Image 1 (tube, helix red, strand yellow):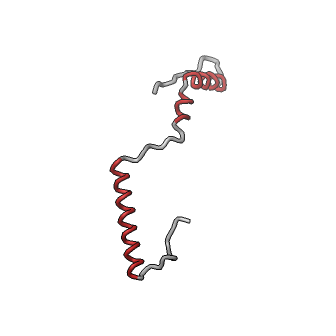
Image 2 (tube, rainbow, N blue to C red):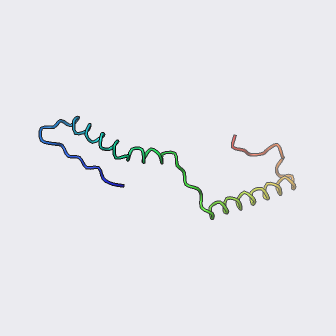
Image 3 (cartoon, rainbow, N blue to C red):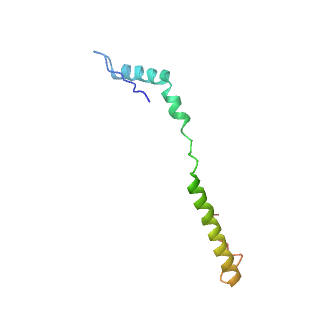
Length: 81
């Protein structure tokens, strides 16, 4: 990512320098580059997805065992809702 450098000219107001900076920033395409990645989320790694799948299998087996032994009723299903 390149650096956008603007310095205030002698006798230039802050607003004028800021306006010049924003113009350079917009024309450089950096704003569009930054905004394009705004809602980007990385894919989880292969290890992370496998660990998640194993965790789901373990929890499902544990839940089935509790239902079969009568310690958990099917209506008492914990959920995210």
